[in-house]
Length: 294
Length: 189
Image (cartoon, each protein chain N blue to C red):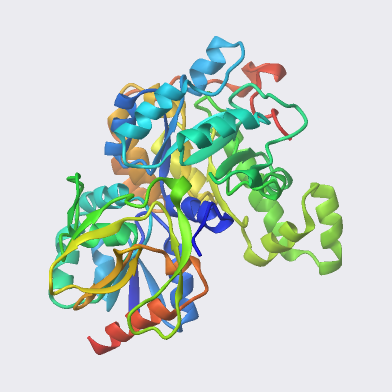
């Protein structure tokens, strides 16, 4: 019996991406630069988050023609984003044959209460989180991979750090808890009890967890890896910088050798200007992307 | 027996856990010096283009080739199969250029087509539950290469002396037989 679209093949693809960098691209030329630099996957978009932020208005799924062009032009897996709760955009991406769907707070939410029931799909989903409860709710809905949200399009790593630390701290706390406190933990975290037990047993999330949102330098990427990320998403950080190919290659090496400061020092040299950063306190509450979804 | 797992990118942890389960010691290999202390090498699943480029940057290709030619057992899963091959159809990505096979990448299709199936493996008494993820197949093989398993007429597991490859991922299952089979090759070498 041949079984397609099982949870094992979905989470399995995420396992294969570990130790890698997933890069946002808006056209085939950028996708090829990313592939040549050693990206494990590309995220096909119409605009990178920094431009989405600047443009304002409603941000939606990209034009399928752009996604298809990228799918046909590179050999690595191609991801694309749908709005939170917009299961029809997800049906469209599945029909296109996209390899991974990101139900993303970077786009304008289509549903402020419900995320997509990801069990309905054969294509795996990655979803954002700010803490353990949010991660486990998404996994409960069928997400095969998690990424911490950070604050996309800022080039400022502070929120990514906050969210990764939150997830890891909560897991460590679960591991040290007496058993009778676990149901209360599930209640407080608003997370499925079985997944709480699994996190405690594994000492990590039950699926792969990447860092995202604000990573702009090789040092940022290595920082997220040392804090416990399985890999990183780099959005605006590459193609909004002065020298995208060099920066992309450097971030790929930094993720592999994240615990080797000599390599990090070497790859951090002469990369040109990083993307201009944005101070979080300069962003008004309604402009924050991370608070979209629950 | 110290078995290195090439740890540039991919599902390294799953191979290390598998080795632990069969009572062997897995060693992380990222740099040339890490090759000095190992008796065998596993190249994990991951993105073959990424792993190839990182091998090139770390100048690992020649040292690994030399060790394989001297007889060190090596086992590649999925991306590892691709990297161990002499040729990849329609690609000029960096390879170890060791096993006399031509490989087609993503041959079974994109992620939507990824699948699980029970397959027969030569010498195994019962079927093996194989997990294929954007998997390659072996398009052509030299007569010296022993094809150990096929799926729908496509070669998905093969051995050429000290080199073993699978297009699927035993490390994503609880079945330790292929890793134990590899350990036997290591013990004999």
